[in-house]
Each structure stands twice: as structure tokens, then as C-alpha cells.
Length: 127
Image (cartoon, rainbow, N blue to C red):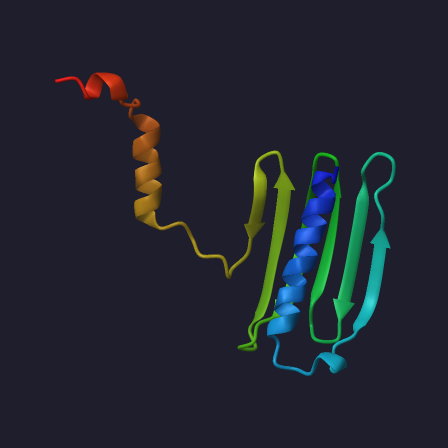
């Protein structure tokens, strides 16, 4: 069975590969210029980082309780994108300027749901 950290690393590598595939440069020109990987030890601690010639850089580390990391790349439009993430018992939580903010109406709806008691479905359907 894969640990939580290995799954997060796998998902990040897929993300980086997708970003790499959408670039408009020749794949033969993109090379890894730096790579460091510390596989999980008996306690589940691991870390990795790499950088490529096309501007992708990522660093991450984790253990059996979760993972943290940062990813940087240049979008096809030429805009530098950086995001960091935490993956733990609360789920995957990315942060970055390119991630849109939660709309105000969604925040209001969630607050309404939090402050109002749930409806008793069986009683509400009685005539």
C-alpha cells in the first residue's frame, strides 16, 4: 500500500509532466539540470527537488503525517507561476497568486449552512 506522501509526490510529478507537455518548446531541448531525491526512510520521511532547463523547479518533503512543497514554472503565456502546498489530515491545500479566491457568495452560503440547523427531512415531508 502506498503511503500518503508517495501519493502526493506521484501527483506532483504528474502535474509537472502535464505542464511540460503543454510547453511550446521542443522536448529534446528540455533537460533536468538538478535533481536530488531522498527516498522514504523507515519512518516515512522523504524529500526531493529538481530543476529543468525550461524553468520548472519543485521541492517537497514529507512524512507519514503529510507533505509540504513548492512548484515554480513559466506558463505558456510567459507568466511565472509559483504555488506551495500542504497535504495532511486536512487534505491538499495549495496556495498561490494564480489560484482564484473563493467568491463572496460561496462564503455567505457556507456561513448560512454553518449557522442554521439541518432540516428534518422526514418531518418536513409530512402533510
